Image (cartoon, rainbow, N blue to C red; front, side, top):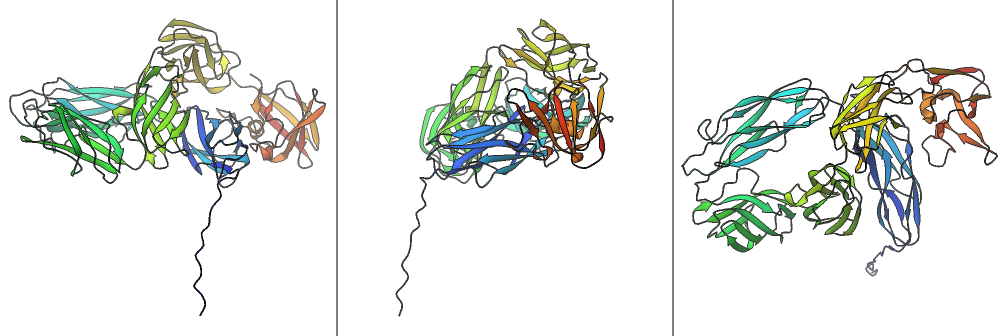
Length: 606
């Protein structure tokens, strides 16, 4: 009889140098985001230094240097000995005014890499006329508190659109013209407008009736807009005569599925409370501090949003609306920000406290804008608030486990001088020399106005208006108009698009096998690949695509007494080319792949 096999234990060494790889195989980014960051993380050890070089690949539907900058802002990422975590390849996303389908391009990293060394990025277009929806599913107001305001938001802000709004008693417990004034109206969103408000007046009475509700409904969008979700919202009216407890706020409003989170519940009529339940499970360490405040410790519960119920001898609170909602999450939560205010110029270092933070795959956003951050531990992150206009914004943390719920604990207030904002150009098109009125906010003290990156002469008329002249070197077609002040530079949005209608000149070269020497008189600093493919925005039908005929472009570098090369087939591959743009007045040797002649027409210098 053979002896029984002995069990074995395998120990995986984590003391090696490790390797670098993308945190995801796919990424999505908005067209107007400006710069997009894509995580590269180090795993398998931190001994020694590692490096990765970021690059792009032109294998998909997005065009390099038209839809995105093919040259990364930070081409090389370095990890020192003992350093782990995630760093980011940063790519500029180039916005246009075209309504188009999502487009994709490729990412690649080389160097000390393994595993996920390529990724696909999808650019989502934002030039539509808009989707209209309520900002929340529920709104709450007191019976005696005056008008209740609801907010309708617009995603995509081009053009003028309208939508009907009205109250509805269908499925409601509140009576029209008994508990509230029935009403209807028309909301108009002008070009660049992203939100509108509407108010409903509750009717105060002397009846003990508890919280009642009715609905508001959006219908009949016009101007090319469509309805989003939610298009119907519930409005709660809290009764000021009711002896029942009522919850107005819970802090924090989210926590781990393991329970153990200390929460403070605010409201009215809490005196004598005998129990508090979260999704039907009793909260422990219950303490009734005042008639308006209770503290307790949450029980464990599966992930999801549950109702919090306070019970007193008079009864229990209503569970209508969201004021009594608490969210259990297996992903991250934010319980506090310190500080929770900072300057609009984006220099504030913020400590984010919460749960479920991870060392890799984590993204911090302020109002949707990605912020630079450092991982401290599973309960602490440190981030730098990006520049933003003055006001209150939501901070969110996204990990592989999900995104933190939106609660009052994640509110951050920007103060001080706002970064400039461009909301309207008038006119929005014209030739070089056109005088353009730039409308917006935070324009006082402007130091620079650019059209497509070209500096313009300008006059600051007020904090809300600048007049500028379209400069002579402005590229033909749609360009972005950006305003810079000491507080920052205006964000790239659809509202700052200007169409330069000046006639575009062209230049034609006749190329011979094998080499033809030309002096470049086309657009200065144009991407070599874009020039070979005849890519420009807007498209010029007189240019042509000669990419299939060209094997290489050479130029002589007088400083080093050597020839430098560009190979179209290797565009976007890190280290493959000595140059990627063509410079005015420089001589280039164009190498044809096959015998014969080729005529190449490209845009001339502006």
